[in-house]
Length: 268
Image (cartoon, rainbow, N blue to C red; front, side, top):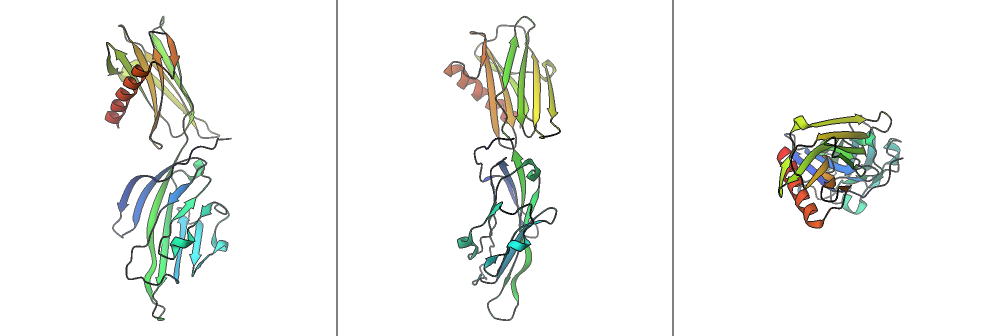
């Protein structure tokens, strides 16, 4: 069973207004947490929201939230989403149709959610100010933080193995070496990385083997970057102590992480 993790609200990696005025976003979040599907009707001509009706559905046309004339229509909601959606009644009356989708799983990853709305005018003519229009479209990206990596170094065989388990999506693994107080990236020909996905929980495990180059090295660091969560976990081996640990001397750790961030940014 996957553990509960810290909430990651509002990590919007992109925002596009499509040609039909539909607001399109990518929403990044974490498994077991919640995602804000943020959407608001921007129409100054609408002064009376009492006749507002709208619904959210996924890319299977399954309804996860329905609202009509001042009330939530629970009978329209599919059982897949019952008890998983929170709304903001105090904001709906101002055209804010944002909802929160809770208890995320990897089944939600990559799924697209769209909102459609209609508003009758207040003249009694039963005409629409806004007629069944798609307002927003959100694509959800769900990530799972990686477990603590392990780094095993064999100085006789001049090899190092960085192992990582239990994350999603597949990690981007990079190596950094500290030599004569300067950092250097590792050429791909000196690294062999294998990544496998578990068919049951869909989580990834990776094993990256490095052929240690000749010469006196001060330290090496293995970085595993989660592109969905934009997080990097690291493990460092300090050759002065011969120990592989997540905590090396403070100055060295800061230096290596700063160098790694530069390298990861360059790769991306």
